[in-house]
Image (cartoon, rainbow, N blue to C red):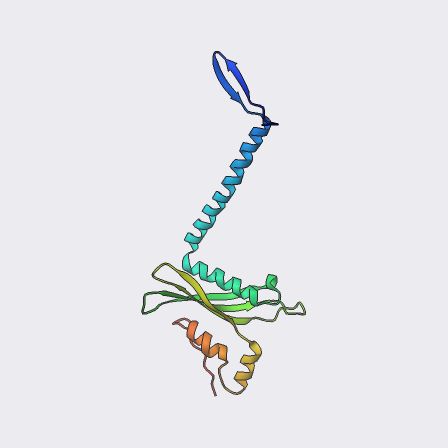
Length: 173
């Protein structure tokens, strides 16, 4: 054991082990190395328990939306709401809907577009986010010119984002 000197001090007939400075440093390094991951694991476990499936759905939706943006760091969710429904199987469907905005290739904000996501918290305890879709604004404008709903409106918005507070989109024509 080069570099580690073990020293004993005898006082009144009893031996006291004196640690070298290197040994003390090693002990503190080991304690920190073990304690930081444990503290982080406890923090993330507690956070996940606290936010629950609705929070998980929001987190997954935000992460997926960032992946669809030209400038992910500029992404802002301007408004959003959550709708929960129970399936016939007893699973909890969680829909997150709203308006997301971000910068385009020129560095200017686009004005926002709608998004809709669908997550499922099963009665067996599993959770997954299946769909996160953003509206193609130009596609919606073209569909409205011919008095039709856009594919986003008919497939996602009117299916996921409708409840007593949020009516479906209709085209008056």
